[in-house]
Structure formats: C-alpha cells, structure tokens
Length: 369
Image 1: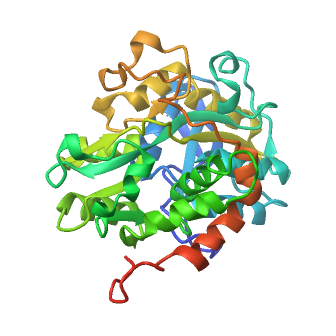
Image 2 (image 1 turned 180 degrees about the vertical axis):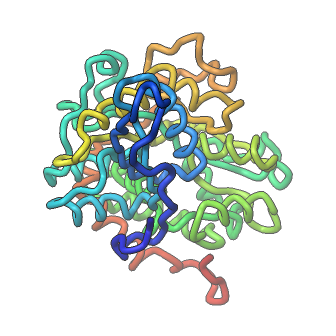
C-alpha cells in the first residue's frame, strides 16, 4: 500500500485493514464498510490494537467500519497533510504535539472536533479553544539517569543541576533538529528563561552550559535508551516520563527519573479531524473513541504496555497504580510556558542551537550518534 505514496514519508507501515465489502451471512446480505484513514506517529503496535478495538465497538452497526492506519514520523505528518490539502488522503491525525496542531489550524488544515463529551474534562491548555484539536495524553519532561551508574541520592534534582561540571561527558541528548519532543523541551526551557522579555539569550546560555556536559546527540529514541542503559559513559538524559516507564517495564532497563523541582515542560499529544476529508462522520467517531474515558484508561493500564498519561481530569480513582499520587490536573509541577511564543520562535531558536551551540564544547574526536 506504500507504493506511489509521497516520497517525503521516510517511514511507512502497510495499511492495517483495507476497505471493501464483507458478507456477514447469506441471510443478512452484504454489509458495506465505511473507510477511515488515520495518520499517526504512535507506532504499529498501538495502531493495530486501537483499530481492532474501534472496529469491534462498531461491528454491530448496519454500516460497519474498517480502519486504515499509517505510521508516519511525527515531523513528517504536518508536511504530508499540507501537501494533500487539495485532495486529502487522511481523515484523522492522531498523535503529534500541540504546536503542530496549532500550525495546522492556522494553515486551515483542520475541521473542529465534536467535543461535547470530553470538553468539560479537559483544561483549556489541553485543547484548542475552538476544538480544532483535543489533547489525548500528556508528556511531562523528566531528568533520566542510569541507576547503576548514579545512586538515587546523587541524581540531579533540578534543571540547573545538569550544568554541574561533574556530569561532563555523561549526558546524552536526542537531536532537537530532527526530534519534535526534544525541540519542544529545549524551546520551553529557552522561553521560561526569557523572563517574559522574549529575549532568548538567557536560554541560549543555559543550553551552552548544558552542551559542555554533553557526550553526544543521538539520532533516535532506541539509541538514546540503549546507550543510557549500558551506562559505560553516558548516565543522564532528558526525556518524557511515559517513555521512561515503558523502557523500565518492557525492557527491564535500570533507569530512574526525577521530576525537576522548579517545574517541568508538559507536552500535549492530540487528535484532530482533517478538513475536506472524505469520511468526516467516521472520523468524528474515532475522535470520540480515543478521547473517551475508557480508552484513556486502557492506554494508561500497565497490562496493555503503553503507559500513557491521560488528559482527562475525571478519571480519579480509576487511574492505574503507577499514576496514583500523580496529580494529572496539576501536571506534576507544570512549568508555565507561553506556547504561542514557542510556536512563533521555535524554528529560529533551534536553528541558533544547531549553528551556534551544537558540538561547540565537544572534543573533536566525538561523533554524533
């Protein structure tokens, strides 16, 4: 199914289930299926799982549903949807940062989502004010460390602790030029250090000091965690809480994490309907499905292996044990960030980091992973 698709996709996984006709039984006659196409960076495993559950939920309807889902890198989705503006192939975009959805809304690429059920359970910073996108999970940034290499009592407790010279050559950073999550974290730290002035110099200086302790910049998350788990030299990184928990439980990685004491950027993953899509009503059903309380709890449940942190504030005691004690509504000492400024200046800030800060303090024989 990837044949002939746009070459800007640098990863494409085959359609899960194709549209068509099926015979439910000879007595009932043929049952026509509505088609749904979802673009997502969440990975094939979760896409297959949710496609199965979504279809099962609608299997008894007179008109059934078959989902076609494409796993596309996060940084490619917005570009792909822009290129398909005249003739959209996608009905629903599930997974991507709030910043990407803001860009898509500004570009006229989205239709408002039906938000009646979930609206009262999302705070204003977890959705578009006009419901052009809705938050599905949150990704708090944390300081991650190898527990074998760094005792819990010695692990950095706050952002500035990462600048201590004792961590020189022990920090891994995933490349923010190609990684949306890392770019957002860097930009959030720059924006909060501007003190509301809009001047990024204090943030740049912090990143320069961090770079003096960086061993290398990794190309992908798998490399990041594999290197960190080995602990030969690198012992620290910055990443999101959910991914750390997944690495510990799925791969038995010996990792600890610290929620920075001064507050942390909390990134939002969302879902949206594509303007001009061919299957708007089915798309609305999928949006309702992934924002429902049942599905947010399903994706948070450790036995399902996803460890997502829900956006809804009405789940209370139904949250799984690993999230007990985490106030999802307070977002774990959430750092106050003006994401509109980040959206406006992000490209300039990351370009400056890439050209003026990256590798400036690294020894010449260090290679970038």
